[in-house]
Amino acid sequence: MRQIDLQRASDEAPFTRFHWIVLIWCALAIVFDGYDLAVVGIALPSIMKDMGVDATQAGFMASSALFGMMFGNVVFGGLSDRYGRRLVMCLCIAIFSLFTALAGLMRDPVSFSMMRFIAGLGIGGVMPNVIAQMTDYSPLRMRSTLITLTFSGYSVGGMLAAILGKGLIETYGWQTVFLAAAAPVVLLPLIWLQMPESLGFMLRKGQTEQLKRVLTRMNPGYAPRDDDRFVLSGAAAGAAEEGAGRQSAFGELFSQGRAFSTLMFWLTCFMALFMVYALNSWLTKLMAQAGYSLGSALTFVLVLNVGATVGAVCAGWVADRLHIKLVTFLMFVMAAVAITLMGHRLPTPALFLVVAIAGACTIGTQTMTCAYCSQFYPTTARSTGVGMMLGVGRVGAILAPIVIGMIVNMDLPLASNFMAIAIPAIVAACSILLVQHGRSDLVRSRMGSAMG
Image (cartoon, rainbow, N blue to C red):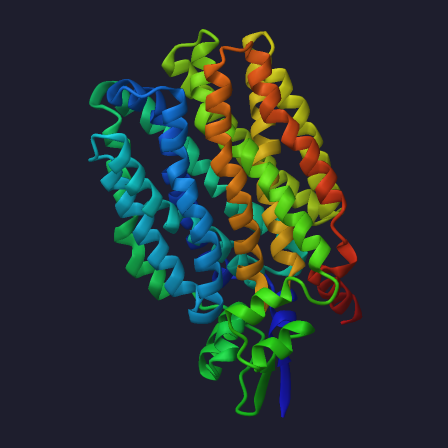
């Protein structure tokens, strides 16, 4: 009998066409996700004018999707560990695409917020599953790079929303950018056919033949045999073989000395998402308040997301070669500096540079936090671990548009508004430093790879 460690086979696999397929579909799912998330911030000034709401009311409207995301992160992250990531990913894409489009048909704040809440359930459910899927299937030597490359699709979606917003809102109205969100539904059959199921799920369900087919595609050097027995290394093995469900996956987050680090990930994500959603929801309005036209203000959103895309990928590449925790810490420190500078009068080229750095070190650093978290836990608890972290972090995301909306209503100096967004970066830098890296499943993977 030949025993094959599935996680080690994934860790040591060459990068093949199979990995490209997983990468492309996961990245596209995040692009769709990012578009649906950014579209409210892009259209917010127009929505406020059309519906006659003030900044505080608009903050609650922007947060409605975030309430949904909080539940979606936790519920769908756990469900995928039980029912499979592929099914949950397709379901979530359908939910957020259709209900974002429906939000564009609403004419009052309450019905708009209801549609956005339901859309948020799907938006929140996609993220932990995509991150966990990429962690499962990425070769170890380039894992952080591939995860951050995938998650940079979030920024691409934000850029797409900004580009469409500049071209459509002033001419055809804010509703058009919401209706465009329904387009990804047509791709769901292809995602279902081409996306593999997670390794842990197939092992728990005894899907031996499917595992052999996936391993053959993942590593052409693998030759399946009738006596192959599949296992998952380390703590993941026991959980998988026992058919662990959502509750035991949740227990993994607090077992083997991981409890304190789990709480630190939650605090870090809370602060990171506060910054991300504060900027996504209010950057257009704050730049307009500073004297820029709507078109110029939307350009700042575009620059923010370009910076996030480049910053996340570069940081992932560096983290694969240095220490992921150190890279994440330094990015949070840079975020605090950049966001503070955004509140001061700078030459336009310098301001664009600062906004790009802010994007790299807020949205990009949130991506790094997710990449780190997904590698911290064993494969049977990855979706749950990332989902719980994002679920708790959504509280910060929910509060951000509301809190910053209240601050904007106070008519404080522009610098004070941006300072309120920058302070959480310092807290996040401290909390990520307190994560106990020695408890990470990443350490086990690297030790196993070195021994092999």
